[in-house]
Image: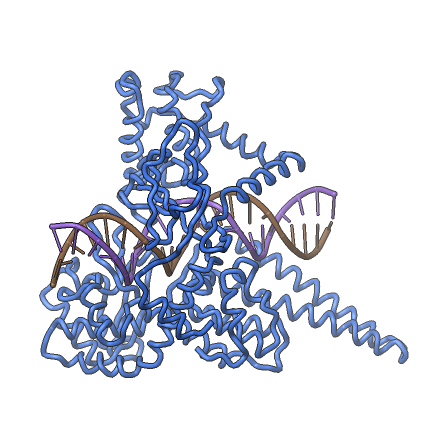
Length: 555
DNA sequence: ACGAGAACTTAGTATATACGGA
DNA sequence: TCCGTATATACTAAGTTCTCGT
């Protein structure tokens, strides 16, 4: 495939995404199964039999009882309001106080069920596995332009209680059950259309080949549209991914010019241009997200670059022996905290002082800027350039640089993998990809330490044996202790890696920001099997890169 | 030209499965 | 072979950007 033809086909087409599309439609959530009559609900201490509709919603709450958020006011208020909508008028008049509701029998019942599931026999487990496999084979694939492609999410999201991330104003609301009448099917005219379940109808069957989705519906919490789309291993996702990294490589070619430009713009006499230039500097230097405006009260209060407020920055003329330090503290995507102290150019500092002058903490830092203005400007600097390209570019270039710095060819394989993970980690830190430390973290570190101690013991034994061994046995003994030494080293590397990774999530950058060709090339250059850095799913997603990249690939 | 809604990418966590040591 | 932990996958929320109607 000629790269230029491919690229231009992506960039200059009429937006046609496929010619033929055939699939079986979605798999619906299983219908509600009423509780057995011995599992009771109590109101104000008295048993009360709930109508099926009200009971179902009650079970959603009961299943979450162990979670901290069922104690939160917002969650409880939203839940109770939506629950009441599902009650009969009689229930509605009786059940007026959530605090008087006792879900504990339901909760115990579900816990018992989940225990029972764990305790199933091998045969029962196998049966379930086979049923899942059957469903996957029937609904998990589609035909798109002569290829059988894996579908990412062919199951419709089941009903339940919405739990947004962070301090979400809608937490606890009822996410309603999706029915065939809510579903829009997208497929080609000349395909076999998916059949709705007996006695039901689709909302619509359309044939839009300018989009990639197969199924869509509107969810009731935010009123947004949800889609069923293809797996990352599919042609259509792979090409898009490739295109994304090619765009980032184009930025690499002109990033110096763009940097010179925004530095120049810091001096502009127009406020909007200075704001634009400082924001772009943050996006470039700190890999911040663009930061669209959000509707207040609809979602958690989070920000990105363009939506930063005065309260999110503290300016320090001097701090820890450094001049012009900006302290960032805000909640970003998924309410993940971004905290960073960054020394900046004097001119940036002075500009920030100016932007913050005479403003309240809750005022926008960049009051003359939004993502649309910024992206329009970027478009003029480079065709196709948007704010998020900087994140991709800086992530990938950082990986490449770090790999060059950290890898030594004399190292053995585990040490090289450690270097790779450290390079990956540098990117994750740049992009602020955090995770909650695993619940079992301390324990797992202890276990590893125990193994290390045991291995050290073993090594000491082996060395003693070596000393006392007769000459003819020495070589064999020596080999044995070498092997143990190697195992010890491997364990120690593993411990270091795990410790450094406590609160860092590598997956997101690996999957979304790092040009996979860099990793493939690195593997080839240092003789590392690709399986050591990409698992099966990742290898499928990055098949295009594994095919393509040679050891001398440069991002 | 602009804003709302649609489309698509990116994100962390919950759950299922695999794996390795006793 | 079994059990507990580690890793992979499923899930779906939360972003960004694109598109289209006015």
